[in-house]
Image (cartoon, helix red, strand yellow):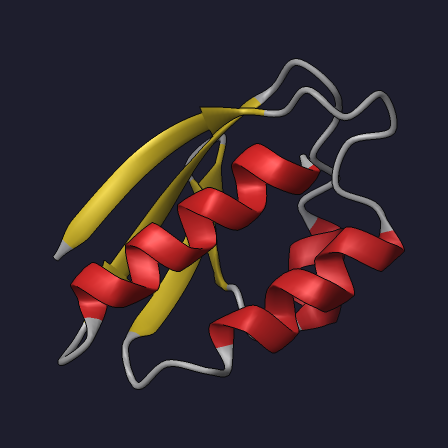
Length: 85
């Protein structure tokens, strides 16, 4: 299991466009990838669940990847966050 914390820098937070791209990115891997905010954790492949977290600018989320390709998955998702959020 691999994890990282990330503080959202996008002014709008995690809105529809990046949430959709995140879900698509997470589906590329065998590992289960979750996003957690304020104790609530959802599967990153579930667009509506990610949107339901209501992640705003300045809030910190925890990303976890668990599975066969967790190293590659966590690196890829972390890079996406750094480039887009």
